[in-house]
Amino acid sequence: MSNNFETLAIRSQIERTQYLEHSSPLYLTSSFVFEDAEDMRASFSEEKERNLYSRFSNPNTSEFVDKICKLEGAEDGYAFATGMAAIFSTFSALLNAGDHIVSSRSVFGSTHSLFTKYFPKWNIETSYFKVNEVFKIESLIQSNTKILYAESPTNPGVDIIDLEVLALIAKKHKLLLIIDNCFATPYLQQPIQYGADLVIHSATKLIDGQGRVLGGITVGKKELIREIYLFSRNTGPALSPFNAWVLSKSLETLSVRVDRHCDNALRVAEFLEYHDQVNWVKYPFLKSHPQHEVAKKQMKLGGNIIAFEVKGGIEAGRKFLDRIQMASLSANLGDTRTIVTHPASTTHSKLSEEDRLEVGITDGLVRTSIGLENVEDIIQDLDQALRA
Ligand SMILES: *Cc1c(COP(=O)(O)O)cnc(C)c1O
Image (cartoon, rainbow, N blue to C red):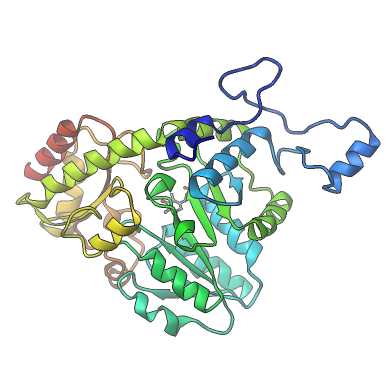
């Protein structure tokens, strides 16, 4: 088969059954049967590669894993019920008590909670670097450091971290480089190509892209995935076959959706950049973005998330949200529908002002996930909310 992204996303599928269905069927079955005692023995001892029980594998989850592996250029993978299940299981499978993580300070909120609240229970500590201080990473590495972890673009600041630099550091110090590639999707950026060992996605976001199901996945080096698989088949965070079936279908339209998301987002970012009620706009494919050159190097397009600061601080941010008419106020992102959030008064309200500012969340910061509505309608909605 061709190696072109769009073709792989559509044409890689599990084997057809006797019914010669065109679209992959849904295998809603918790377990699979054995021919006889010998078949059962050989299957359990892994002499045979086959489905036994859907906590281990299922044709629908395998199809989803296979597609993401092809799109990310990965050897193997395992699919999870949510993005957080993927992140938690990946770290838990690979780390021992006493190990150390070096991570970007700007990571998804629940990932930050894992690092600060839960991993310390097992004596796993994390040191943080700021997105614009990758030159400090080496000074954070200790003899027990195992993993270097980052997201790019980051949430909600839309900063970009140079994946090539991270890979060089990881290689030099024999660390595993793990990248949360959720905001970019494999269509815009393939971290394994730059030297990442593992790539994680919340499939809930742009991969589903239609606000329907939760899902997560980790892909990368075969021997690492083996550890993650063994951990997960015992602890049970598996993706449901139904959600896997939905997500495999979603992947067929990923490239066209993300193309349009990015076109719309660039148009909106250009509009906001010259708006008199806006202090600044951050979007990777605007020349004004501090890491614009890195973004151009490692991303095909700029993604669909824009951060901008409304003039007038926290009250102005909240008022802006109240005046929005079409866009949704919702915790999700990467949906067909444009979504607007105000991190300082919602997702990051529990952080001290100092901590918030350190990750770039100023009082007036608004995060928008640009959807697939007509771009003039999106601009009109944001404009009237800014002007009112
Ligand atoms: C949403 C998100 C997650 C968590 O994914 P869930 O599917 O909600 O568990 C992890 N990382 C990033 C960057 C996200 O945006």
